[in-house]
Length: 313
Image (cartoon, rainbow, N blue to C red; front, side):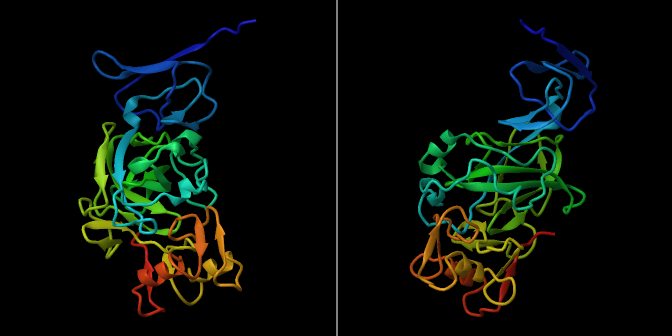
């Protein structure tokens, strides 16, 4: 027996009526003569909101295109960064360690306005070269009048060349927020997060925000590591508390030793772990390309009691 289709049609005025937008093959949005939009889909009445590839899926209900913005963000991570081209290595991907579900919800990162539990298809991790995926990244849009107020969050992917893309591996990152100016924050599970110094005007047409070459200034002092003409997020935050420490309580060196067993400093362990500062898929406390040395370098390299804090308000 075939079930009847129920079509729902909604007229919207010029002002936004909601903060979500559906992406579905059974509906569309059209501009009406004289202003406003006509949004429709085939389905049922609204019952839930789910994150889908490319946007937010709300069964049976669709909001206008004016409640989403797209942004092309570019950022480097110190852990996998090299002086080669492309700029970062993708050892987590080639080693088969990257998860298909974003890791930040489980780590307690705040998810706002549709962010959280993003997933990727295995085919996204088959891409090699400059567009190969390095890791998951966490993004925030903050209020233009209050840079501590998070208005939206998304988990996305960073490529070897620094491009941050949506979960399809190629598209600009979409946020379900109306066109306006926002501070933009880029954060990573074992790097110190950054925030744009100024609010940036965003709209449905993608805006480019480049944190790798000084084009986009960052909030605070020495918020990024600078190597030549390249800027990148500081590595070493194995504890995820926003401060890189080599000694003392809650330091980032001890978790590396604990991860490899705690007694044999030359031991190693592989996998997708926060203690893997170099992001090559292997946690190492001693020897070449170990993760401990990066922490010491980040705090200055000479005074082990020095620290470095994320420049986030």
